[in-house]
Image (cartoon, rainbow, N blue to C red; front, side, top):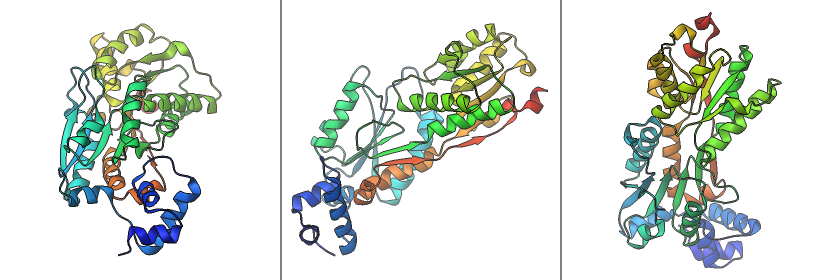
Length: 340
């Protein structure tokens, strides 16, 4: 196998530059990055930063950081369970062990300390928020050259390894499905705007309405926290406006099912429900009454790809952000036939 020195000589750069490019550390000119990647490919030199860490017998752990969500059972949430399953499957295939860690309430995770204390050799971050402190912590991780990947969160202007789904297109599909059937007064129950995927869902809603020749009505926008309870709470508002609201699009299935439950608690018959579309296409969507139309997100595949990016950083550098497609699954809850 070729050496790093041979790659450096062929690319016309220093060995340190080769290391920085292949490990994704610091700012690198695009032309320099391209030369190093081409030289590495030509010589067959594609090292894995994570594999080298395990070879040095540092900790043997791939860290997975989960957010702190009050009163939420994260492992039972479809979103987290599917991504963790994908991560675990790929980690097992590569002989890696998982160390699952939770954010401390009210504090920002000190990611770099996890590496300094050799608790982990690489890190996958789930549920990160777009706020200054969180971004600064991840930027520090990046500056120190530690291998990590962010899932389902996009930090604009950064070149972190990211694995995400096309939430703009998923939301656009949901809205167009509703407007194509004649629904016009569509309530959108979104998640907190501190998550990039909430912002992207909003963009998709705007785009879908625009394509249908409609404008966004701010009075029809509600915000939850992705929990079933927040859906139940939103049902109180929706119930009061059922005479004008003919469809509900929720940013995840839990909130959509919560709204359904809340409406039933208030005596609203299923046949009088507005049309519903959820998001994630969780197992619960099929079991809801009526069965819930939902946007399918490939969470398991996202988890697998996150591990692959860490195992093959040179390849991942060619496309730091991976955006997977979403798909609308239509069921009875949004069917005009069901509501006829």
